[in-house]
Amino acid sequence: MLLQHGPFSARSVLWLHDTEVTLTTECISVCSSACGRPSSVKKVVSSTGQERIVGGDDSVEGEWPWQVSLHFSGNLYCGASVLSSDWLISAAHCFSKERLSDPRYWSAHLGMLTQGSAKHVAEIQRIVVHEYYNAYTFDYDIALLQLKKPWPPSLSPLVQPVCLPPSSHTVTGSHRCIVTGWGYRSEEGEVSSHLIESPIITCISIYSSGCEALKVGVYLLNVLSASTALFVSQGDSGGPLSCQGPGGGRWFLIGIVSWGAGCGRPNLPGVYTRVNKFTSWIYSHIS
Image (cartoon, rainbow, N blue to C red; front, side, top):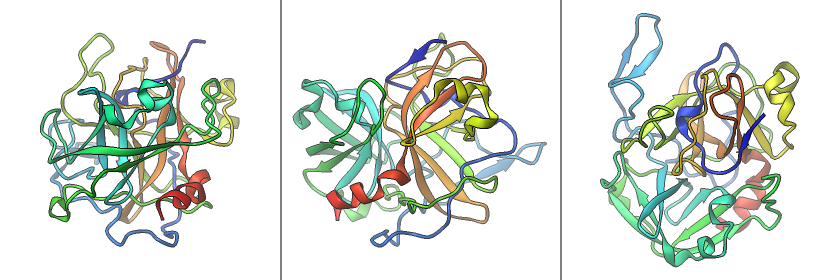
């Protein structure tokens, strides 16, 4: 089995059957009242009754207001999520090399649907990589970015923070989960300039031979792909895996895109940083 560590595409994961990531709707202490509430977007219902965004898998403006495109030296390199007016969250491996750890080379593009159309471009003041990040196992693959200046409130609702989950969230079958980013439209194709989305599920390792084979640690979350290939793309690493309760309501950040497994092989999982394991660490830096 080939393991692809590093940049990972939103197009690598699709629906399977009947199990999705879930969590309680409880918010921990300093959760923003505005978090996890995207703008209203137009939906259409397919013949199978499943809601779909108009235009297929393309997202619409305001649907994922916490999605961030991180640019290194002017080029799309990783994704991130908005936590507050001056903090973002991403993956540690995006900043693991010496030059990549220098905030002067980075910019954050907020409120962006297509590349080049950001509502706001922010400079980065500081990058906080988890002190236990392991570049070999990808444990603790999490980082925080502090903006030089808070993004202006006038950007709302096109820029909004995502909610952080409580540390005790559970896995059942009643929540809707989506991974978003700028990934390949096909394995041989070009990277999409438009923000795209794919619904996913988690796989519990004891039920999935694909997940079993990877043996990831407790700080990582397996996501099993129903597609025949994993389209790996710079630009999606560090981006959000967001989940919403069965009755609608707030969206929570459950996972951070970490790495993918294989290419062109069925039923191999993608792996995400499990955010609920790091809520205390996150708030120790941003509170």
